[in-house]
Every structure is written in C-alpha cells, then in structure tokens.
Amino acid sequence: MKRYLFSIALALIFMGKGYAQSVTVDASIDSLQILIGEQAKIKLEVSLDANKRAIFPAYRDTLVRGVEIVDVAKPDTQLLNDGKRTLITQEYTITSFDSALYYLPPMEVLVDNKPYRSKALALKVYSIPVDTLHPDQFFGPKTVMNAPFVWADWYLFIACVLLLAPFLLAAIYLVKRIRDNKPIIRKVKVEPKLPPHQVAMQEIERIKQEKVWQKGQPKEYYTELTDTLRTYIKERFGFNALEMTSTEIIEKLLETNDKEALSDLRTLFQTADLVKFAKHNPLMNENDANLINAVDFINETKEKEDENAKPQPTEITIVEKRSLQTKILLGVGAVLAAAAFIWAVVYICKELYNYFA
Image (cartoon, rainbow, N blue to C red; front, side, top):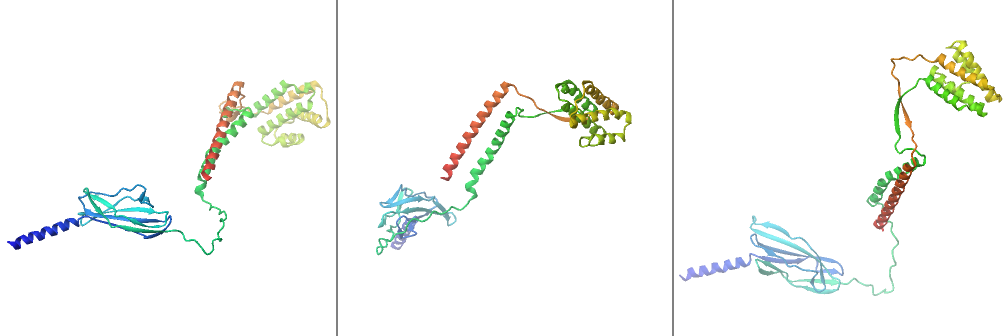
C-alpha cells in the first residue's frame, strides 16, 4: 500500500513539473556593446501550447531610463510538434545616447493571465573615441558633391512640359488666327471645277468692270488681260504659256489653230508688248477692241462641253471675316486662357522648386 501511494505522489510531482515547463520565455540581444546612437535588437521568444494566449509587454518610448525603443516588429508565429506547440517571436530595436552600462530587467509575458519572465540582459554603451593626443587637429568641411543624374528626378518636369506643350501650341495658333482675322477652324466647301474658258471669261469680266485703263494704268490693264489669256492657253492647250514670250505662244498655237483665229490674238499681244516695254499709250477704242479680241479668241478655241459629263469637284478654302462682337469674345477668351496658362506655369515652377529644394 505504501509503495502504491509513493508511485502516485511521484507521478503528481512529474505532472506538476511538466505543467510548469509548458511555457518558456527567453530574451536575447544581438549586441552587448554599442556606440552612442547605434542600434541593437532584443529578441523575445515565447514557447507555449497552441491553445494558450500570450500577451507581450507594451513599451512606449523607453525600455529603461537612457535606453530608447526605436521600433517594435510584428510578432512572428511558428507552429511546432504538429501544431500542438506555438513559438512566438518579437523583436525590439533599441538605442541609447548616453554612455553607460545599462541593466535591462526581465521582460514579462502574460499567458492566460499568468506572468512569465525572461532573464535579465545588459547593454554597454560607449561614447565615440576622441583623439586626446591631438585636440587641436580637426577636419574641415568636405566639398560639395555633385549628385548623380537620375531620370526619376526629372519625370515630374518632363510630364509638366508634355502637358503644357499642347496648350502653348493652341494658344499660339489662336493668337495668330485672331491677328490675321481668320476663323479658328477653316471651312472647306466642295464646288464643281469650272472649265478653262469659263474661268477666263469671269476674269475678263472682272477686268472690264474695274476699267483700269480709264484710270491711266494701261500697263496694269494689259498685264492682267494677257496673264488671263496665258492661263487659259495653258489649261486649254496643255503647254506652259506663262513662261513663254508672245511670239513663242503664237508659233505654238499655229500648230493647232488656223491663222484667222490667231490674227486678233497676235494684235493684242503686240499692243501689250508695246505698252509694257515701249511705254505705248493706246487709244480708248483700241483698249476696248483688244478686250473684244480676247473674248473672241476664247469663244473660238474653247472646248465643246459634254452635257452628260460630270463636273470635277475641287476643294476651295473659304476665309470668313468676323464681326466685332466675335472678335471681342475671342479676345476675352484668349486673355483668360493666357492667364490660366501663366498661373499653371507659375504653380508648376513653384512645385518643381519645392521638389528639388
């Protein structure tokens, strides 16, 4: 009976000892000696059953007087023994700015509201060594070093330039169009292309209405009249009459036309040459006769129109003038756009200065 009671008592002792060893708390420091301002790490490890809950010590700014806590890492949890045990590790980064030997008291962890303490630690903090043999010797300031070129420092500036460039080009285009009294957007109108003889007859009608020869300008009158005929001949017969002399034009036309149709044209060109180069002053009826001769030549040499032929389209740019009210509105808009652009440039320059300063 006594032996049986002794066995029970021994089993209870070992069970109590096993329970007491179910939670272990251990603390270690990676460096026992540091210089002022350097850092050291304290690792706190807690081993416990997986079904238990541990609460680590919560420090604010200092571990003890003179030892400051710089950072508290997030706890790291590992499962051991097929998930039956848990190992929790937490690191504390500490530093000190006073040289001394510091006693770091045990760190207390609560496991199911029961305290468990680690062993105490020590930390020796040394001051920076001073050359006492040469107290007057010191090192001056170092020269300014040029920072290496890094594209990342210029990304903001490049982005601002790319964003502002379209606005600047649009403002320049807007100001130029307003200054030239032209519309912001050019209107394009599609009209049928007139045959050469109709274009020439319209130009001759304009010359007739202006009556330049009656203003004492016979040279201008014959220049416009012969240029109109040269343009017609180029479009009608296919050779560059604008770069040819009157004689060359007549000789070229003789290859394709009868002499009677060209006799009046020859007279017109001769009179024009006398006016332009010999300062000849023709009579009023002579000017009218030459105008009629030009019309007769065009009518006698024009191509026969095909009623079934479709007119060839051509694009004609229409330039419209603006009213005074439109100019005022565009001017106000341009001023507001310029003010907004200047404000954006100033703001971006300020931000860039603050960024690189």
